[in-house]
Length: 193
Image 1: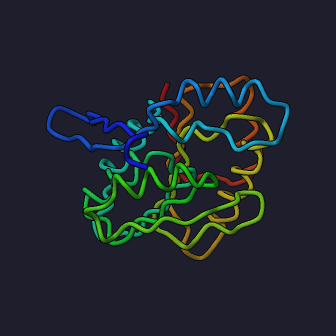
Image 2 (image 1 turned 30 degrees about the vertical axis):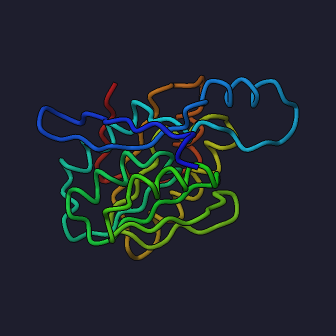
């Protein structure tokens, strides 16, 4: 329902921006999620996160024209739209939350190269790609481990994608858990703060 959405233009640099859609009631959704003991889907994909901007810039620096980009935990789709605007041949947006996929689809309406898929990082296999993005998806230690295992498996395939990962929230120990579960020796590893 478009009445519950708000457009947000995310500035990636002086001459480059993308417009995503966020849930208008994100604060209410987060409070409701925090107040429950149930195993409910988190609402964090309903808002653009700072790590997505960093990941978008890294996509530009890496060069994704003509490449397949896969975004794990796509949320509102900042990285998805960035990759599409940089002429990726295909952008696969993965998320567990139906609401996040709908937000991403709304933002990507004008890009035919974007496809969204429901994805369970604990069970599903990351599709073959040239560049894999995992941006601000380390909300819990167990999710960080699951993301690390899934990304590590993708990095060990014959396609050997480049990995762009961000953790702007820096939850205690979650990045370390991701990296340990990733279990990959990197030819090049760049850590930015």
